[in-house]
Length: 195
Image (tube, rainbow, N blue to C red):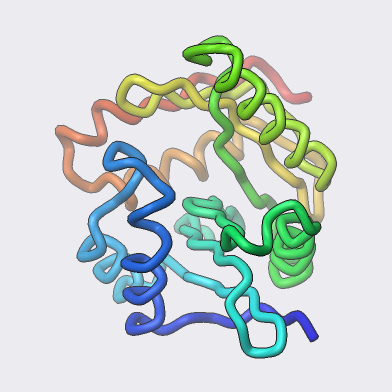
């Protein structure tokens, strides 16, 4: 049986050290102490997907101040479970878990910044994965340090209002990047209108 579990800090620490540190680059990875602080502030939640008591994947997420917008900060399927549909399963479980919220957001690397053909293929596959699982691309982009990300969202109980979405996302980024110097390097574009 597959289930989604809310994780406490000691389990998050284990996952961070065993998996997240290896799968995400230094530029992508927040320090563990920052995750601990955000969890204590009750704006950051970490979930593990388990099958028969074995971790198959995890999702670390940040809530907007209104509690209605959820950002997928980290999503990973453990290596031995990849390519078997577990990515779609964890997204489905998250969509069910947060069905009473407005938006579930994913940041996906821009195709325009792909470094080579292999990287372009990887980025294209990520886009297709989110689209297959009900996410829609918005007109919003995020420049995070030197990386451009396209914003994908699954509207959980309403149509996408990009102005409202952008305001909620800026609140999330203000919480995640509370250091003002760092926050100046995390810039969300203005909405181009509602899709």
